Image 1 (cartoon, rainbow, N blue to C red):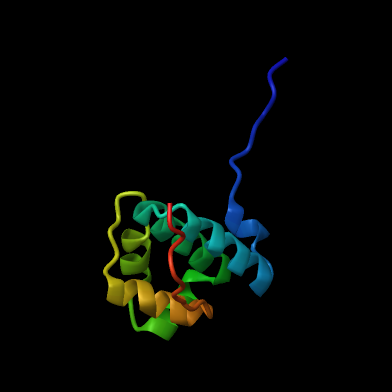
Image 2 (cartoon, helix red, strand yellow):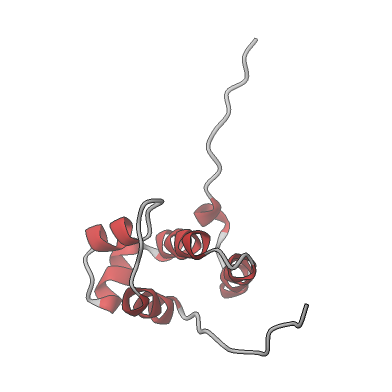
Length: 97
C-alpha cells in the first residue's frame, strides 16, 4: 500500500501577524538572501498576492517572478512588499564571534 503525501505549504499556516513575524525572523536569522526572498514570497501568498500587488503598485506576475526560487528582488521591491505586509526591518549590533 502506498501512502499519498501532500506538499506542505507554510503560507496556509501564517494566519496571524505574530506567526508572520516569527516566520520572517527565522528567515532573517539564516542570513541567506535567497531564503529571505522566498520567505517574503510565502508571506505575500498568505496575505494574498493580489492585495500585495495593489498596495505596492507592482503586478502580481512581477511579484511571483521576483520571489520565486530563481527570483532576485530589488531592495526597492523587497521594502515595498515588507511595508505592505506590515513587516519592518530593524538594526542591532551583530554578535562578536
